[in-house]
Structures are given as C-alpha cells and as structure tokens.
Length: 270
Image 1 (cartoon, rainbow, N blue to C red):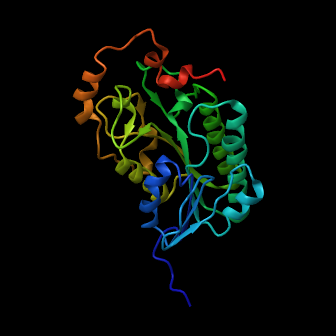
Image 2 (cartoon, one colour):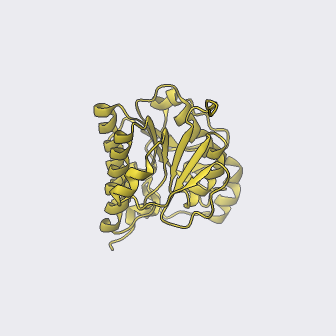
Image 3 (cartoon, rainbow, N blue to C red):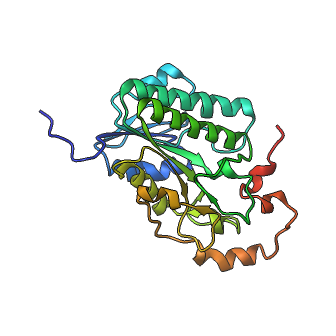
C-alpha cells in the first residue's frame, strides 16, 4: 500500500512546460509534488524521475480531457505568449483555455494557476498606476485572449467552485533587458515564489495578481492581492544604471513608450 503523500498537491500539471517560463518552473515544481505531469506541443525530452510527459495540443479537447485525469492542481503556462494573428490566438488561448477548465470541472481539479499577462491592461499609460480591480484595457489579440481567460476563470469559480489565481506576468527573464523592464521585471526566483504562493495560499477563490519583483518604480498595485502571500525578494534596481546608459533617451511620442504594453500596443496588423 502506498504511503500517503506529504505534498499539498500530489500530482501537479504544468502546461507549456517546453516554453521559456515552463522550462524554469519544471524542476522547481517537481520538488513540490509527488508527480509532475508536463505537457506542451514542443519537445519535452524524456521524463525525469517523478515526471509524466504527456504532449497535448490545447485545442484538442479529448487530449486535454485525458491530460487532466488524476490532476490535483494546474499551473497553466501553455498557449501562445506573443502577439499573433487572431485565428492562431483563438485556437490555443481561447478554445484551449476553455478545454482546460472544462476538463478540470469534469475531473474535480481543485485549483488552477493561470498565466495571464500584463497585456490585459497594456493600454493604460506608463504614468498611471493600475490595480487589479480596474477595467481591463488589452493591447492586442494576445491581451484579449488573456482577458477572456480571466473571465472564464471567474465564471468557473462562481458556478463550479474551481479556484484560480490569475498571474498578470510582467517580464520574467534572468535579468531585465530594457528600461521598460525596470518596471515590469520579475526574476525567476520570484516567479517560483509567486506560483507557489498561489498554490499554497489556503483560500484564493478567484484572484488576480501582477507578477513583478520588488522594483523601485512600477505601474501596478497588488494591494488587493495581499491574501496570496506573495512577497518578492528581488529588484530590477541593480540593473538600472546599465539599462539607462543603453537607452539614454526615449521617444515620448512612441506608443511603446507611452503605454504600459510596450511594443505590443503597435504589433500587427497581420
């Protein structure tokens, strides 16, 4: 007879496990569960000890329903993560997210951590501070799809009780790459802290939180998400001097400088 699990969620599912952030989270999440099930449409390599590798296109409903079998919680990083033509976005980010939530309902999955995006509010200006209760202002088809995902998560909590924390991820890289990221950057360690806080907090209901490190200046206010218990440890400040030297002047007439979404606000048309 198997011994009872000491983990909060014995089997976790990580979608988008072959993506940039999925690759960062894969080993870190494995340490926090008995079995980590990983999925993507790209190559996932061989399963490590304690892993299950299950490739699945998110728009393939039967495959996604199979993917959720026996899953206690999901970290949903899958889908298209850049601005692309609407028809492509629809398949992975809208139909795919619906498939995931419907599968979670059928299989009784308790909680989903949904990788939303700061691009849900990308058409607020950089001289504004936005909190998680303010109306969305998507900056493109990608942002629209993430706004849909947030609304879908709200619906599945209100009707079916599936808890979700929507992470409006800023710019998560090893280090910030430009002056915009002085406000939006989130370190990989803080990404892990944010995801685990979202899984570990006793009661989250339906929650929204911006994913950022403890940067000295920012456009986002997480006051309404304090119950998640996320306390970032890193900051973009050590990178400031180099980035300001790299970009000493900004074009204040450029929409990418005016609006929080940066280059996403002027991507396309396709």
